[in-house]
Image 1: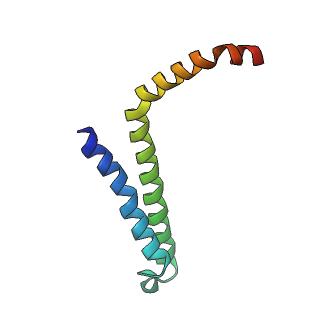
Image 2: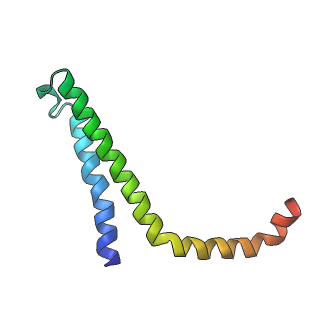
Length: 86
């Protein structure tokens, strides 16, 4: 479940970035006029925004326990130094 999920999370932005680069380089941009270009740009922007937010949220949910443990260990290791600085 976890491995399949991480592969899906990683493959989504790659596919979207390839599509984005294709549009930027003029792949299907020659077919749009005026308002259509703006609509295309908005669709690309929203897709990229959704992809990266989706990736961040998924990674955050799955890594939350790991990060929490890491932060606790790091804090315990550097507690004396942090308190001295404060």
